[in-house]
Image: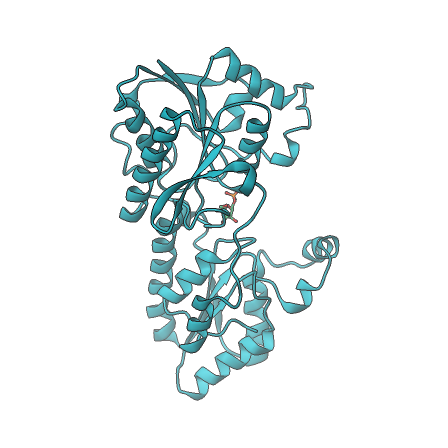
Length: 357
Ligand code: F6P
């Protein structure tokens, strides 16, 4: 008999259900009797003992379903050691639920913050297995996270749609793509959508270089320009500010996001019409793409095998096309950012894409 807890935490993405299905199907096929406890709304369910006993069949028929059947919430890692409003010690509460249910293992699906808490629980002595999800693809120690390819399809499709209207009107268009700290999604969507300019957090931009790229296109009688701008794109001047100074600056400016500021600057410097499109949370919605379904089936099956082997404390990663067990202690708290000199950026520059540097 195996007693498994499972939860999804942090921002949702496509394929969370597909990954849970993979884990449960893998375990169910091992022949062992199985008891599954699904915690609602991420760590919140584990803290406050809000869970449901689920059967393997409950994870059937969810391969193509977006969102998460367990619900999710953001429970910041930095507040985990801070008691809640009623003075409850959250870490002790999570351990209490785990031991009360006599779990063999807790399967945790999430992004960077979730991973840090998973590692904290491991350090506290719980058996955990972590699966890397996020549309941002910024989890260190795995080549790819699930959700990324599905979101990439949506972001690319958005740029495709904008392309036709931008061309008809000879406008400059900015498509703002998710990614606060890292630019994997805007970089890939920008290239796939044929954007002319891509601005990502890893390469602070000079607005004059951006304007120069637009002017060059105008000179070549290209009437429109598409910019793929990361949520976290930052100018070279602002990249010099300390975190505190940047926060003060952000609270003073009246733009809803960086794209609107860039749009204003371009309009002022070129006299061109500029429009901004923000697909926002659409990028995390809908069904997982085929790639993510396959990825999650593999990661889920590999997680089930790790549980069978009692090899806990690992993230189930994808490295060079193979699933792998990566010790959480080696990766938690690290971020996978883009090297500005990597081959992909160099090749994108070679075909004329401007990064504002
Ligand atoms: O981490 C995934 C992500 O979608 C980021 O790309 C984005 O910046 C953030 O979550 C949005 O968070 P929320 O859903 O809390 O608005």
